[in-house]
Image 1 (cartoon, rainbow, N blue to C red):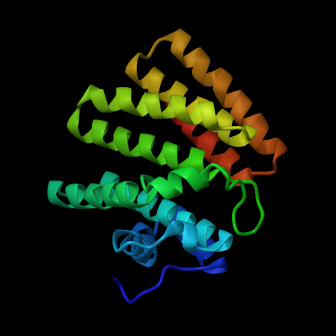
Image 2 (tube, helix red, strand yellow):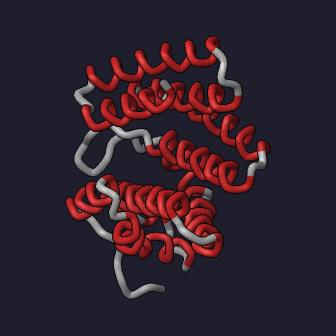
Length: 217
C-alpha cells in the first residue's frame, strides 16, 4: 500500500480548487493514495462517516483530473495511461459493493453542504465513456453514457444536480444530431439548470453551465 495518505479535511477542497484551475496532474497525484487504499482492500464500511465522505471526494477529484489529462494529452500513449487511471479508480472505488450500497445514504460533504455522491459518481462514469467515444469514434460508448445519465436522473433528488444531469444529457443528444429541436431542448434544460444553481447560490456551477451553453450556441 502507498505510504502516502489521501488528503483529509480542508486540504481536499484546496486540491479541488487547484483542479478547477487546471492543475490536473498535481490534483491526480495528491488524491491517488485513496485509489491505492481501495486496491489494497480498505474496508469502506469500517471508515467513519467523515472518512467515507473524504474517500469519495478524493476519488472524484482523481477521476476527473485523469479525464482532463486524457483530453489534453499530446500522445496516444499518454491518453491511454490517463484513461487507465480513471478506469482503475472507477472499478476499485465506485464499483466497490460497499461503496455502492452506502453512497446513496451520503447526501452531504464533509462541510455539511448538500452533495449526492451516488449521482455524481454515475455522472463521472458517463463522462469517462464520453471521453472514450471522443477518442475512438465508437458510438456505443455514447449510448452507454446516455444510459448512465438516465440512471443519474433516476436517483438524483437535489434540484441542482438533477437539472445539471438533464442539461448534460441534452448536450450529448444535440451533439449527436444538431437540429433546432435538439438545441431547443438544450436551451430549456440550460435555463432550468441555471435557475436551480442560482437559487442554491452555487455560482461556480452556474458559470460552468453558462460556458457550456455558449459553446453549443
